[in-house]
Image 1 (cartoon, helix red, strand yellow):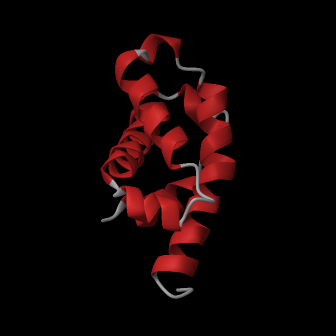
Image 2 (image 1 turned 120 degrees about the vertical axis):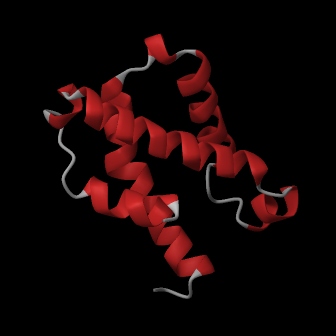
Image 3 (image 1 turned 60 degrees about the horizontal axis):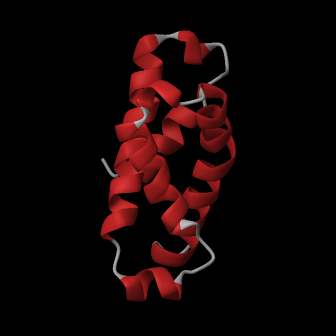
Amino acid sequence: MPPSRSSDSWIKWISSDSLADAKTQSAILHQFLLIGEIAKRLSDDFKSTYASMPWSAMARMRDKLIHHYRGVDLREIFKAADVEIPRLIAFLRRQLLGGE
């Protein structure tokens, strides 16, 4: 399942309280790792065409999660899951999937 599809479903049940659960943290962080890794692999042409999306920020978040995991603020992750992931999903649906 593509990250955008699976992310769409877990965002609906995530809450700041659920972030206290280690399994939930791991699942959410894994989704961000996947998104960041995909963002790193996008061609420069693609990123230029869709420059309104924060591709480099997605890649940087992945790097921070991989290399500085002890310094990760779960509140920031929750904020990104709550705000940025729905924005990314809407973009993907609108631009790449024809508004599905």
